[in-house]
Length: 278
Image 1 (cartoon, rainbow, N blue to C red):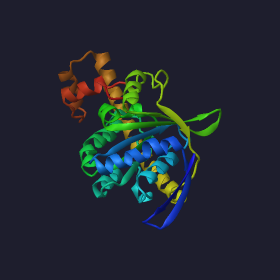
Image 2: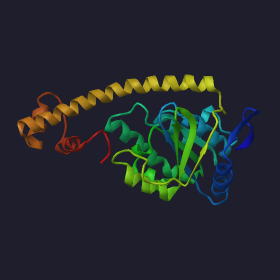
Image 3: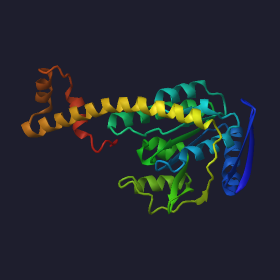
Image 4: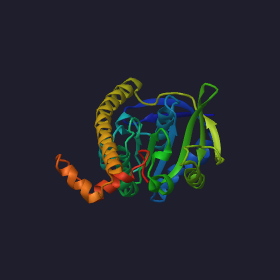
């Protein structure tokens, strides 16, 4: 482990934390040079179970890549993330924290994925560092997971002890996604290297937790609407199956109850499976 000491020019505060020496030497420094000197961007994924410290780890990465990183660069929903990317300056790091937490319906997952895909060009043009923090990278759209993201850090605990990670580069990450997505497993693909991190906040912890709590409460309210939508879709599937109707007839029947859905929309609903993208 190497001691990292960074003074943020925005607030003149100096942050000290330990970072894996191999990570700092062979990845962080090379990534910074690549983005700043070769007109590139860098999309990094940090995933792992709740409470394993993935956000803390992501913030340490972010500050190492961008010494101006602070709480204003942390986003909790698609609207905040879109605004942050739009306002970001060259070479800044933006963290989309808990990107998919609390979202279970296909519609909600699709909304976040569509937003991520739509912003990739702007991220590239501004040469930004972007870190996406989420429960599992298998929730990501294939384009983002396989082609746009360069790095995957999977955070985990071992025998009840937190602070461990494994790293997959682009090729290993692609193989892991293709092999593990069906069962959401990380078994079967060897990581490039692994390491440890020590929990140390590099942003205002209290303000971060306050913002996070408010964001998750707001997301919970939206999730209720998603649940009602899912109940509606399940009812439509039941009617289609039990009454043995054509899509056109089902569409006409629903109109009688002021539910306007075209045959193509009904077809999409019937194809939905397990709340995931097909």
